[in-house]
Each structure stands twice: as C-alpha cells, then as structure tokens.
Image (tube, rainbow, N blue to C red):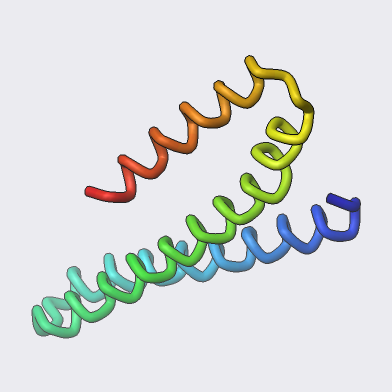
Length: 95
C-alpha cells in the first residue's frame, strides 16, 4: 500500500470514528432527555451500522496488505498464521 493510500485509509477511519463518537454523545444526550425508546433504538442501529462500516474498511486493509503479503511471501509459517487469524475473525463475525 502506498503512503497516499495509507493516509487516505487512516483519514477515512478517523473521519468515520469521529462521526461515531458524535453519534454516541448524541445517544447519551437522548437518554438524559428521556427521548422516546424507538428514537434511541434507531440511533443505536445507526451507530452499529457505522461500526460495521469501520470494520469492513479495516478488514479490507488487512486483506490487501497483511494477508496478501504473507500469502505471497511463500513462507509457510506466515501463511499459517494469517490463515489462523482469518479463521478467528470469521468466527467472531459469524456470531
């Protein structure tokens, strides 16, 4: 990954996480204002979806950089390590 791509990736992640932080602050405010439960649940759903978007971006970066590099290295130990990591992540997200 080129430096420009790394910068774009990190910038996008930071932007998304800042939005999520704002959403969670909004959630806390909604609770203190005793807002209607459905409004709170809708906001929670939006935060969860935003976090899924962050996860997808991080996973994409991992696959494009770490995993690809390890698999192309032709070093069996690196490939096995990446395989175990991928399986762990898949099982965590499959819940």
